[in-house]
Image 1 (cartoon, rainbow, N blue to C red):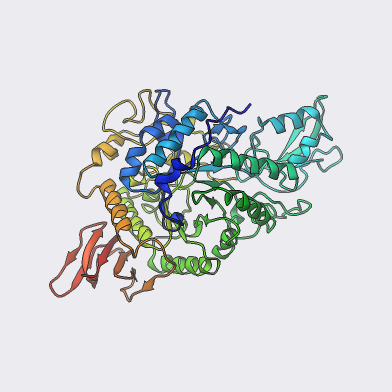
Image 2 (tube, helix red, strand yellow):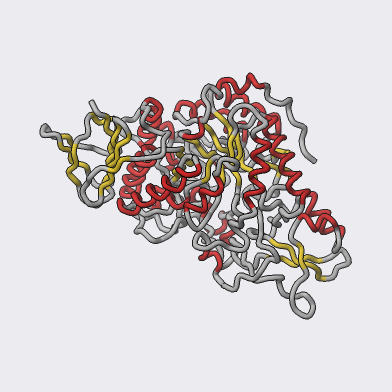
Amino acid sequence: MSQHSADPAPTSALATVADRRDWWRDAVIYQVYPRSFADSNGDGMGDLEGVRSRLPYLRDLGVDAVWLSPFYASPQADAGYDVADYRAVDPMFGNLLDADALIRDAHDLALRIIVDLVPNHSSDQHEWFKRALAEGPGSPLRERYHFRAGKGVDGELPPNDWESIFGGPAWTRVTEPDGTPGEWYLHLFAPEQPDFNWDHPAVGDEFRSILRFWLDMGVDGFRIDVAHGLVKADGLPDLGSHDQVKLLGNDVMPFFDQDGVHEVYRAWRIVLDEYAGDRIFVAEAWTPTIERTANYVRPDELHQAFNFQYLSTHWDAAELRSCVDRTLDAMRPVGAPATWVLSNHDVTRHATRFANPAGLGTQIRTAGDRELGLRRARAATLLMLALPGSAYLYQGEELGLPDVVDLPDEVRQDPAYFRGAGQDGFRDGCRVPIPWTRDGSSYGFGSGGSWLPQPSGWGELSVEAQSGVAGSTLELYRSALAVRSEQADLGAGDRVEWLKAPEGVLAFRRGAFVCTTNTGGEAATVPAHGRVLLASGEVTVTDDGEAKLPADTTVWWIAD
């Protein structure tokens, strides 16, 4: 049963964050993974009160909004992305009063709150699904999911050949109330995450109601999980291929990026636009091309979509420039801002990705060259923050945290890790609780340890260890976000002016601002484009108007 909501947030509660329209076009949005951010009660698990206590830190960091990964009531089969009740807070994170207090405090600090929404699937403990199982074949509740008879003489084979993203078949056979093997249900992820049937009107009605529930609470927007997955091709046709996870992002699949999904978001946009305060939708949409991603952010649909093509691009000047151009060219016709992201809760942190050779993907099992990775990560962050549009930061990247690649098997909790032939299942490495202090049982995360073990030496990367230290990664982020907010030529817009640069170097102008990034392994000589605003490493400017740009370094310039 859902918890009771606090009173709807009054319009005045949004006043401190509604001082300009279209804030999201150039916003810097910080992702909080609640279980790993801050633990207020010492149980080893982060919670909403912990997040609330650290909001001043995020305000001082300089971000515009906070995106919270799921905190809904859930059995936690997939870290909360298996939702049992969309209108309740899981007790491990607190309750609705805690959520209400967090939203109000954030608004008082001029921070906006974006919450995760998981519409592709529910938990198998959702009341609809539990009733569907209990009522047996023919239950109207089964029509709200994808239940099908199996193939074979006795229905012993799955209804089609679709494979789970987490490995294995995308179908699980149920035992009917009379004890006999029965129908199968579709789950593109874990078996505990049955997919909704979005062709059924009750599903759409329910989610529009859920939107209003949280909008009435005062949230400023929604990040839509698996936004590309809601609608399945008619008839659920066979794909005719094995190792289907390898095709993701390369082809339009019968279960992903179907055109019918856009009708869902047009209906949602009508709901959102009923509310004041410039609320937004952000799509997690893995599509074959950035051009198809642009379909999700047409004027009557969503506001932003994550740019996974950019996240997946290698540390290479030519590849990065091509991705930037394609992104801006795709977003311009639909009038949506580009988004840029380097890390999140599903991929290896970019400080570790860039520490390894290119071509290993976005989930990497080796630490690589830590010094090289951090140097590249700092440079990549300044490059990203210089591009037009909105940027997303993942908690801890401002500390230069690496992935924890040596977690023992017995502590891992990523469901994909325990299933073969799916994702690598190494997402736990980027989810290790972040360090706040040099010392303590969990380096300031909480008083009772942490749900995933933190490495020794974690404290030297902590907020405490880096605060006020010139040249630290934390101070680099703080300075970059301060400069970005001060410089009118940064953030909003949809174009860059590329400048001539040596091989391996990117250089572009935006008004009086210039960004130069050396992705090569050797220092490069470039023009000094005015005064240095900020640099990710040491830069030497000569009297003759040139600068020596070290390898893997970004510099921000401003015309004198």
